[in-house]
Length: 198
Length: 437
Image (cartoon, rainbow over all chains, first blue to last red; front, side):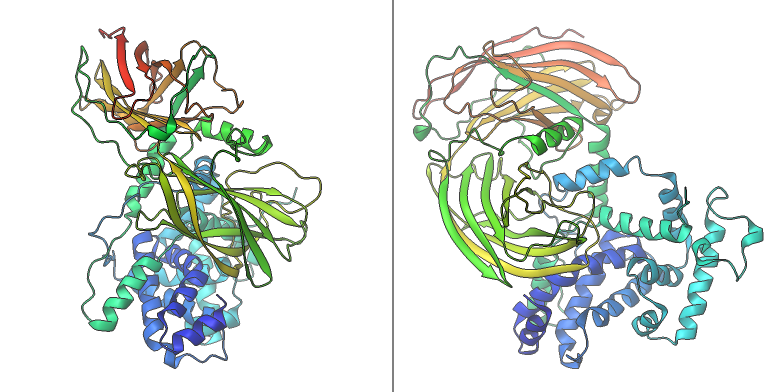
């Protein structure tokens, strides 16, 4: 189902339209939320709630604009809120789900290979976890969702200058959290540092 | 050589973690739809709904990483007469007392997925270079030709053949349409959005595996779904199930799916691409309602065990169907100091004196841990109509942490009897030697 068709159905009150949007955006949304919350249960719950809110507020949605950015902005903001207030308790947490312990063959192969993943990625992941959620979200928008500053401004609903300063602060903070063998020396930590050094 | 910038590494880390920890075939819709329906009636009355506990998922991952089952089966061509599959139904044999540590009628844990270990990697490599998977299943005898096509978004999905038995469901289908060039940086892959038995269990992913092979102007796919312990209530009858496929686009990656050419003719296993999703859905859903003959597995619930040191090693179940032979071994800790997850089981099976790690099909056997202490092994051959003396051997236990080895072997023998309606088809012959360690 195409996005336009899904939204049209949803605006008519057809819940099948919501399913189409879930299929289109759930993975990207959960992954983005997870990178901010660093907790899969919280990320899934954030995205579920965001879809339900979209369902209820689809009347406010301007069909002349793409759904994805509108929706992901909501997801990212919610993920920040959840991360800020601490561990989130999922609405679903108490109920079981059959077969939840194991994932697909291909995923397991990926995990096997990742078991020997580079120390670099581990170090970066650990450092990202030490950032405040707001700064982590900025880096997720920039480096995971691949947004420019203007898009980030729209996504976060803050002025472009604010985005720029937040991004700068996040990069700088992250660099201080990286191990010495990965981060450049302290003497290189200045505003003229090339982007490649964060 | 140019070093990769930290910016690039952060990008890679984020994508890697997201892909690894959030499955691309994640499906929130059942939960969202339930909550949506509840909200329509009572907005604030949201109840707690089924939920996957990710911490347990991660725990299971880790368990799979540290535990490997290496199980080998072999067969010998000394069998005399076949069984009659049309009269067989899963037969439950009463628990057999063994000399040491008789078991307590343990329930077999449902088998939710295919999970790999070192042997799985070997299997995957073999699979990629083999002929058509499950070529030993005579399609004129097993399964059903379907020949139904559905179109969406300029693409056509044609289901060619489908098959179901007590271990496995298979669906062979083709995808045709404006397929991307191999160098375009985009690849297509179908996603199984739904797979459910009519008036029966939901068999939707993540336990579904998809293999692909390039054809001329189309791509062939083979969907495999492990259904062991899922369909045991069904006898010889037709099985109706619904299959929904969506077509997604993915950025190119090392595990990209096949692209059609005239020359490529190998099958690639595990085509569920976890690379970055740029354009998640481009066509579909393609909906199919299928009806195929169902062949129940011959099941022997053996529940035989041996005690070695602080372990209780039990052979729980054999399942034989035309598509596969499956066995299940459980290792329980009898002392708090023992961690089953640290131990690797080396085991195998034979029918009479048949040889080999590889059966007549040439496919390696495939061992995997389903949980930290329940392992399964699969052999790829059709021995559904065979009978004879089967032997299951646990050769040794190896501690992956300390290197300690507890040598066996510990052997279970049993007789596969001719199929007789209403009678047990499996009989314990002997268990030897009984370990004294």
